[in-house]
Length: 116
Image (cartoon, rainbow, N blue to C red; front, side):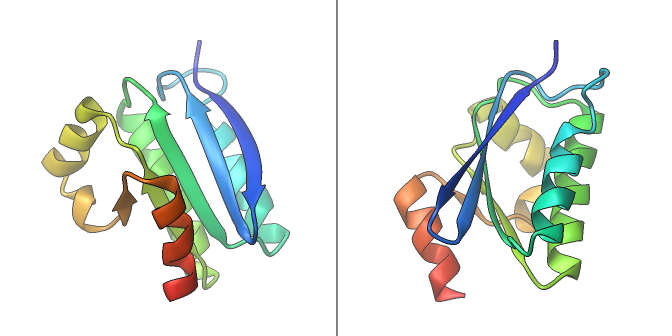
């Protein structure tokens, strides 16, 4: 089974909480669809909480990159929150850690959108 997504609003920031492994399966495009839907609704401040994601495969990485690209191309921001050690290591190995803005504290992450 793939990851489960839930959305919540903190002011003008949308938090996408993901629980479970982000891997290729029949639900592989749920993050991409969620981000695309948010951008269509002009919600362009997106924080992806990965604190409950133990594993990401290449399709999961692709979902993160596609989401980041979609939001950035529309003038928004997508940031990551609470990376597990395994996910953090993966982003370092793939050099994506330099692309994404990563936060460990949710309140600080939400405030960082106001600073932009």
